[in-house]
Amino acid sequence: MKHSAPRPFSLLAEVTHRCPLHCPYCSNPTQLAAAAEELTTDEWRRVLGEAAAMGVLHAGFSGGEPLQRPDLAELIAAARAGGLYTNLITSAIGLTRNRAESLKAAGLDSIQISFQADEPALADGIAGIAGHARKLEAARLVRELGFPLTVNVVLHRGNVDRLEGIIGLAEQLGAERLELANTQYYGWAFRNRAALLPTRAQVTRAIRIASAAKQRLAGCMEVLYVIPDYYSERPKPCMHGWGNRHLTVDPAGNVLPCPTAGEIPGMRFENVRQRSLRWIWGESESFNRFRGTEWMPEPCRSCEFREVDFGGCRCQAALLTGEAGVTDPACSLSPYRDRLTRFVDSIDQKPGLADPFTTVEGELVFRQNPATSRTAD
Amino acid sequence: MSAIPTSACPKISFRARVQTDPISGKPVLLYPEGVLMLNPTGHAIVSLCDGQATVEELISTLAARYQVATEKISAEVTTYLERLRERNLLELVAKPAEKPS
Image 1 (cartoon, rainbow over the protein chains, first blue to last red):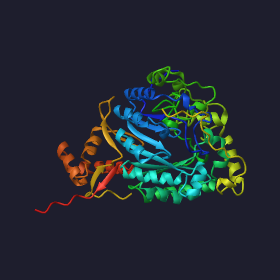
Image 2: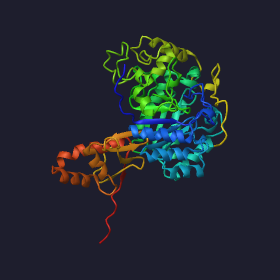
Image 3: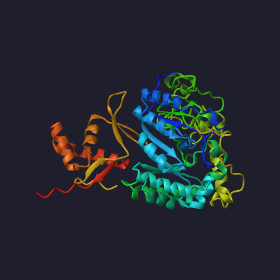
Image 4: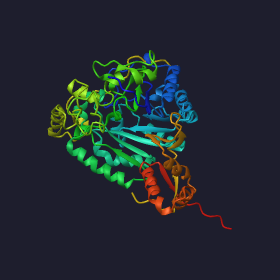
């Protein structure tokens, strides 16, 4: 069933899957794109130009770690030439003064730096690399060069009890925005969810602290906190609908409606090496598969919220039920809701799990890197 | 969040940029997390947020331009500014001191 495609507003350019960090909550696919498959500078330039012509106004540069691409400044300049607002989503590892200045000269508009925690040893333990001190230094450099700064901290059982300290760190760095991002259970994070999901008590406490900070810091620092969907009654309005506003291009040039859709079993996504971005967005089977509301089964089809949350997340539906085309189990109306609540209860009932995940029994898989590394271009 | 004092000078944040949308030809406000399509009223307000004029002066300018009483638009303008401020897209600058004559 084909719809006339709406206008895309934002593009996430995942320019590489290579990353110096090994965070176990990474939402990259567990099958990472090899360096040799990555789009070239010219291919990215073409993609960014096509995106601008389609009406995209916003480009996020992400990964992996986007600074691993030596041509990042050229890609940002290409996006700016098309009138896009450019945002770098980075771990800040590799953000030297030279590098930051070259990005500024290329027209980069803003920078988002991820921190793993406020406490160095814990942060380095989560990242699997001694990077916290370098991140602090890079964040100061970002402010010095006059970039807007967003601090992003992914929350999970191992760091959520340090929320006050984490908020304090963002304040100290002078960030304009703090994203307290609950782990989204896809990719590596899904594999590790038994070790990462916070308990209900932890979530209740975090909600209270985040709301107080939001009020206290209004007008100085925007604090974003969304209740993790495993603990919510309503699903998140994932990407504001499939193929509705957003597209992601992965390192190998596959075009996805969201960063994690590539892992949905049985779905085939088109590649910018074979097709134009405009065709993929408007005409491809993958982008039209869950576009609009006609694909919806019950209880979504007749639900008054169907154009509010769009049936939730297709990737989560696929991960938890094996079917991408059913209501997201994060919705309390989903017939599969018990798959989620049973899991949440199993976490909640284990004693001692409120401690950082070093005390958790079972395996925690740190994110690996793509098999081959690319020589500097 | 406390109300914006009418003596403060609003200024669009350095995080944001106004430009023309190449598709519609209309003004848009771009910022790290998103895009705000500006309607004519929004654009008129945003254009006056230069860190020089106070909220009070901004309202007078708009009232004169659209030939309406300031009381009629004051609430609408203030609400719009407060919404921008909630998204951290507005800075409030103190009125620059008048030069002594």
